[in-house]
Image (tube, rainbow, N blue to C red; front, side):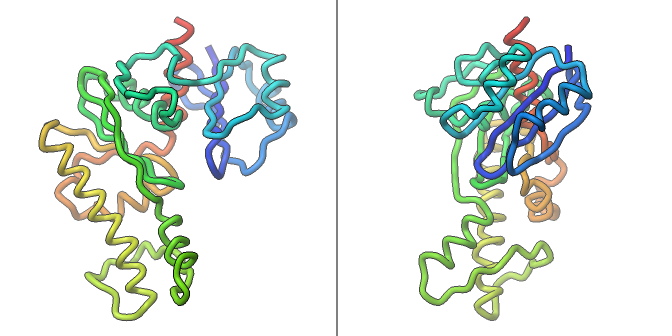
Length: 247
């Protein structure tokens, strides 16, 4: 079976093609149209598709795609391999749910903490028995920089500097970097330590656009040996979900 997997995020849409669990192709786009999807259908023998979206409403290209191949819209009711104990499953972000499904599928029988770095930073834990109870959401890297600029009169908007590793800032620009980047580092370490206390051993999975940067922040920490980078974890989770849903 060859699956077309589409993840519509806050900023970008990711489109991937899987043959069973093998990732054949992936692209990231700001806008998607019927022509884009037709190119995938022309180049691959697609059997079915799944769409996950953090946005409401259905665009014309989604309707067109559904008229050409079997199409599933991912949600908390989709049959999958985990036990979802979230108290309000209808409000759970589809990206968060897909990520823990992906973690459980790729690393079965293991406690995993999924840290997704995108517009927001999310922390979601799936235990060795495939049970998911919830997680945490905090502002993402770029959101923190923009918020400091937007909500103050005098702080400039600056960009991320992956090379910054000072203990503190000695001017306004480096003080902001220290607060944002070191703040995220300590936040990451705090969440990991909290989950590791009751879930040993703990698999730490970094995903999302900022996963490489987060790995840099943690490279000298005691948690470094347990870290795995899976930038396409959400896509892999959606692919696992459509396979299970159609078993």
